[in-house]
Length: 412
Image 1 (cartoon, one colour):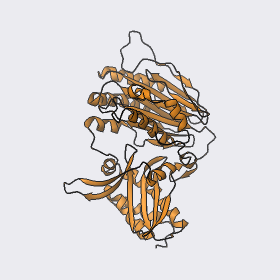
Image 2 (cartoon, one colour):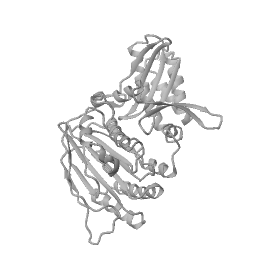
Image 3 (cartoon, one colour):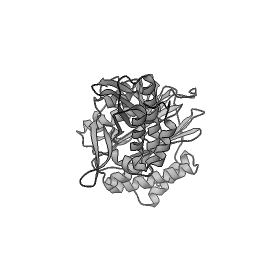
Image 4 (cartoon, helix red, strand yellow):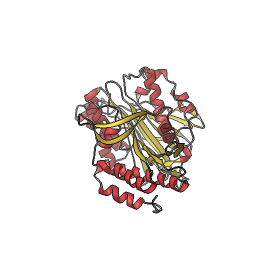
């Protein structure tokens, strides 16, 4: 085993010199040399959040890539992702170690190794560090190759699905000192254009959830205009009203029908939360273990012709440390969503990280529909920690204070 105490500089240098699609293999070779590992593999989390794919650069007989897909439910892989803690066990061939590959709460995947017996805590810690570095390697190289995007998909997407997935933020989860948030989209059979988005500035968190009319490609094109106009306005420094106005005009000008949406802005130095509701379902808030609906004012949807001009109203939202906020689309409430008691389920999942809560809620609606949704079901779950949080309690890029809380109820 190498005497190099860290090996991280060499790991990064090797990964930077490799072709983007070979970066994981180069990292694996580095770990094999440092720790005398006899088996190393990287498993990437599927977009559905219900499986992991063991990536391989091997090419099949038909010229396509190959990947072993493993269901997460009830597996040790699910435990590592949920708790964000390394796992190890003795086997007949050595010590099996599984470490989370995570950055800012985004559970990208898992690093699995088979090490010599009793490698010691120092080596286990070094493996965890390498897994965290691997997250950065994957993020950096993902800009130059389709390999990791391909690995996250259980089946080839339709054109509408390809467009819709590209509209989602690069990371579905984000953590900072003041908050943790995660979103999940459960697509319907004929995709209906649901999207969510967020960005973190120096002192502001922006979040949006949108739902255009229509299905399939028409909905995807409407979502493209909608999300593009919101991002463009936001990046130009527009306030909430300006963002809403820009989206409203864009849909109307391009004849893309109408859409509902909710725009949220939270001051990270003040704690002040404000929102604009454009014909969208009311958000839910859990405080002190009790879930309730926030009955805010509702303005007209984006792109809908109105006889009398009606400006979008910016409303204050009561948000306190310890609150959990849920933004959702009507697919979570209508049709089969009516069979799910979201308030009760939100309370039952209070011990879970927002990542697992978002998955649990959308899975409940999908299961109520027998696995075939008629409308997209989308949620964004946000935990507000407050302003007195100088730093996160971080290991492997995730907040252990929330991530290790554990599941309080079984999956629905």
